[in-house]
Amino acid sequence: MTDYKSQDLQGVEWYGKDLFQADLSGADLRGATLAEADLSHSNLKGADLRGADLSGADLYHSDLSGARLQEATLREAQLFHCNLDNADLTEACLIKANMNTSTARNACFDKADFYETTMYNTDLSEASMRGADFFHADMFHARLYNTDLTGADLTDAYLSNADLTGTILDKVDLSGATMPDGAICAPGSIGKCIARSDDSMGFPPIQMPKF
Image 1 (tube, rainbow, N blue to C red):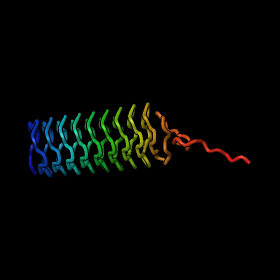
Image 2 (cartoon, one colour; image 1 turned 30 degrees about the horizontal axis):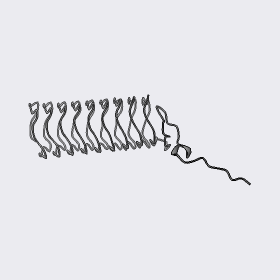
Image 3 (cartoon, helix red, strand yellow; image 1 turned 120 degrees about the horizontal axis):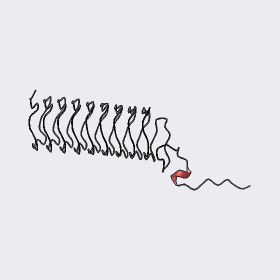
Image 4 (cartoon, rainbow, N blue to C red; image 1 turned 30 degrees about the vertical axis):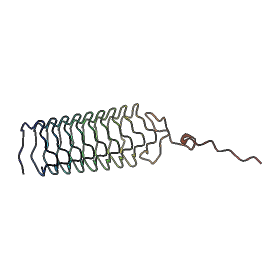
């Protein structure tokens, strides 16, 4: 295991670097380039990754608990089975990332971008996701217990079988979202899902035949 624990690594250029099982806990990686790097099974607990580029990085089974990832780029990153508990990803880019079966309990994702991100069976309990963008995100079976989604955009998001117990949906745009019970929300559903009807899809009302 490569040991970089608590080291000052600001701005390092580690594109595609093999960091399998590396110990980067507490390391200062602000502004680092880690795109396409293999960080699987690595220890990044408490690491400072503010503004770092982790596009396409493999973070499978890595520990990012308590890490600082504000404004970090994780586009198409593999965060499968990753520990993000108590991490701060404010304004992070997670477009098309794979967060399946990861845990992010009590994490902060305020204003983060989850466009087409997959979060199957992800535990987001008590996370703060205020103003986040979940357009076309797949949150099938995700756990959102007591999660704060105030002002988030869940347009066309897939929430089938998700746990929304105690979830704060104040001012959330649910237009086109698929809810846990399978209902699809009509356009303009803000804060509460209004089940879509044929009329809400833009079709003309059905005319009864005249006899």
